[in-house]
Amino acid sequence: MNILVIDTATEACSAALSADGNVTAQFSVSPQQHSQLILGRVEELLSGANLQVADLDYIGFGRGPGSFTGVRIATGMVQGLAMSAEVPVVAISTLAAMAQEAYNKHKASTVVAAIDARMGEVYIGVYQADQNGIMQLQGDEQVLSPGEAVQLIQDNSLNTGDFYPVGTGWDAYEELHGYGVQHTEINNKTDILYPNAEYMLPLAELLISSKQTLSIDEIEPVYLRDKVTWKKLPGRE
Image (tube, rainbow, N blue to C red; front, side, top):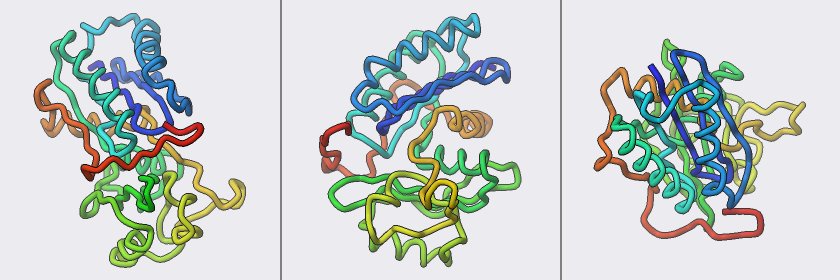
């Protein structure tokens, strides 16, 4: 089975390919360069595996939450690729992808993912690993103020040190500083700031096995709210 996944929802730009179980991936933090980089990365991954778009069985993408512009870039590219290859699509949460990376790298069984949503809010979700090591959402993904995010953590009976924090939200707002399992070697900051397509692959495989695939017409981004919140700042998309 050949699965391609791309993500451009945040400042990071990534693509990953699982070709009969052999995984190759590219990742970089490249603000405002997604539209220039992502197609080339897809071509390099396919070429390295001696595959063409027509050889893909499924295509996945980071559906958000994240940058409005970034999520739209991935959505549009996936629609084009899926139409060309005539294959189904899987839409993967960017928050879940970071939680999955925390499990794969650190065996973190409980993860709270928080992305800075601008305008004094975070996109946030609580995840726990199932018996197969796949991160499962507890409740809903939400957009909350930092104070409401702290309340969400408390409502889930989590205390400082009970969970692994991932995402840009923790360092963005003072109310969230110091929460979660922190590593002194990384200066008390989370080592996973952005979603990475490589860690979307296990989530894509689960969606495929549970038949939660989408047709081209069903592909939609997830913003969690309707109003535009991603302010363009220097070095930010």
